[in-house]
Image 1: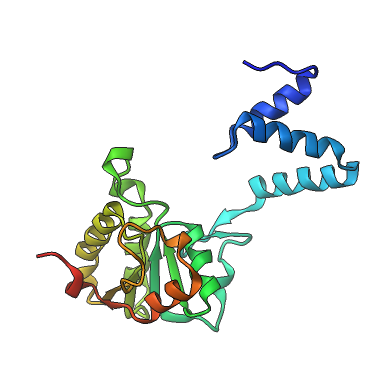
Image 2: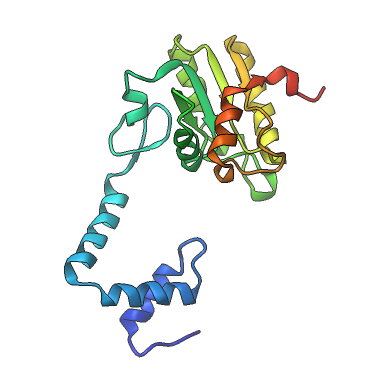
Length: 207
């Protein structure tokens, strides 16, 4: 274990290194950067982290992160409530929104089915989706916009079976996204076209 001349610095490095993708060297660089900042900047940074933890909530409708009980997308009168796009997490919402090609609503699953990682259907926001569809007769189409990995396809198929009783149009993003690609890493043009050129899920299901 590395030791530092300051126990406070050491403790800060330990905390930063707990973040995903942050090793000890990167954590130390971040801590030393903060040490060089003025008190006002550091206080603002600290207050933002406190707000992040205490005030950010999950939208009661779509499970997206929000500053209010109902997120800006769900509460916007300019969005089309007849279409719900199902995504894995908030990063996919951001990616699709950045295309400017989609004007419906979302439902964030909070993950995908992955037995190897111990993630099953019960760990996802699927009951919330079913409850939402039961209570909203405005929804006419559901778009399955999950990553084209084996786990994503498994989740698509599970959701398809769950959604059949609702008598909805069920579509999947077009294969402009290469097999095995994560949605958040697709370029905006390709992702936008994949949303526009979506196809009926039945046509893609392996019999």
